[in-house]
Image (cartoon, rainbow over all chains, first blue to last red; front, side, top):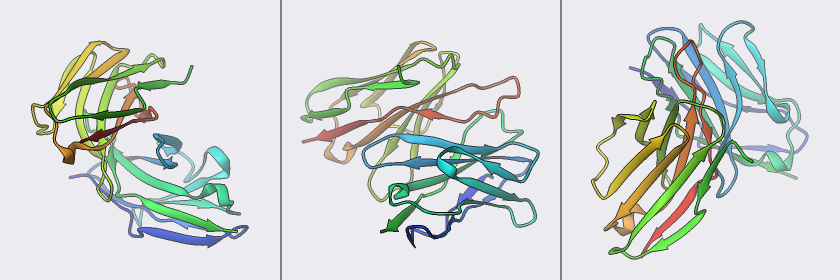
Amino acid sequence: AQSVAQPEDQVNVAEGNPLTVKCTYSVSGNPYLFWYVQYPNRGLQFLLKYITGDNLVKGSYGFEAEFNKSQTSFHLKKPSALVSDSALYFCAVRDEMDSSYKLIFGSGTRLLVRP
Amino acid sequence: ETGVTQTPRHLVMGMTNKKSLKCEQHLGHNAMYWYKQSAKKPLELMFVYNFKEQTENNSVPSRFSPECPNSSHLFLHLHTLQPEDSALYLCASSQVGGGAPGELFFGEGSRLTVL
């Protein structure tokens, strides 16, 4: 069975500091991994994805994520946080061999960047 | 034009009303989805349509009735709702098949309040 865990309900960081939002996954085959961001009363916006290739994936708004197969993790990172990065972040996974194409979402992590 | 458009953005209805949510995607995708997002709960997948055919119905009560007349349009017909149905309803689309990774693109959501 596929699953995603986001172990932190909330992450607090000061503006200008690096941020990390954690995600671990479980799939039977090879994972396709995704990060989304949601601002209040808005839909989810696609940030980045890992399909294959380089373990470090760069996405929108200066975010990047590192795929670690041995640790089954796909943590979201940004070198210098902005107050405007404060939002809800979702990790999602799909098993490459899953013909239903269903994405499994984590429960979300609220990022709060203080000035 | 944004990729996925949802109307209305806000809807207030009584328990005996009948209303519909509309979703339109301009991305040329072949799959569309309805998700429910309630406070303090994970994203809930409600319905999936691939090539206009419903492929998933996650035990959704019959007071929610989806309709997908073509691959660009998706409706959610609402009838005799309960206050606990108040939530943000998100529409999404994706490209499935042919080795596509299947990332979802979401609309801005329809905030539903049932009185």
